[in-house]
Length: 161
Image 1 (cartoon, rainbow, N blue to C red):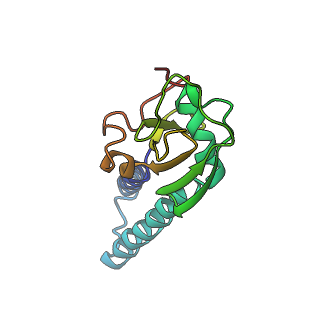
Image 2: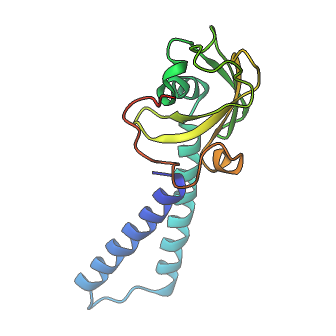
């Protein structure tokens, strides 16, 4: 679930809980000030959750997501460093990918998170397939590595061919 979806879900849950509470306490009317404070608190907390969710992804998670997305990258032992935290990473493989592609430069592959959902994608920067730039979330869609409808899709095993 994306940070935006989680924030929308949180807002919906807060609205349902508030409505249920108001129905139970009809005899007591909430002041406009209390309603305004509750709405501001929900906005601040929701933003904090979205920011925290973006930081849950670290370089190690990105490195693990490469072979989880593509079978040819299994056993390559990637290491990644953040170019822009939570968005863009530069990854280097310890050994070349499987030889199913003769020239890896420009090849794009999906990345898959620990929950087995497509979280972004990577593009090879070198013919030997040892250097990649990976993008997470919408950035992978904007880079035309994956389609918007593929982002978040369930991927129970690494893709092949």
